[in-house]
Length: 118
Image 1: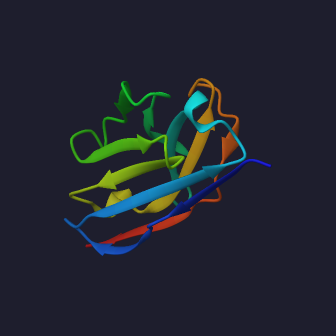
Image 2: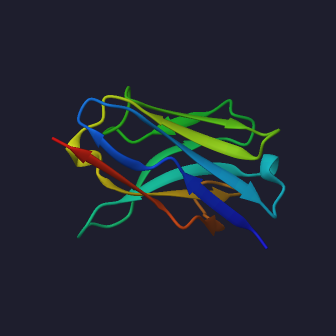
Image 3: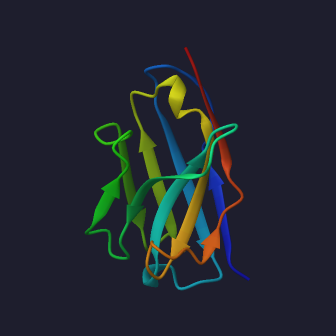
């Protein structure tokens, strides 16, 4: 079955960096757009970033633009989210997602906690 497994979350001070990874299995990874979403306590899940199947197209939420970078390695079936200049408001559970088009998610990961202290 399809599995998306996130890793790399943790506790970091404001201004610091983290790199999230999402390893995919059970699907033809290079066929899928990949996305990152997050959900903070008491809030709805929100879009963070997405990358096309070949990595040529990316997009970002305004709140993370210029600070986060999404990338993928199709040979390793892995998508990454480099998060720099982290802010306390970035604290959330971060989810990896896959979809033939990112507007329609087919699969979700289990999430990884990111906590940014002030």
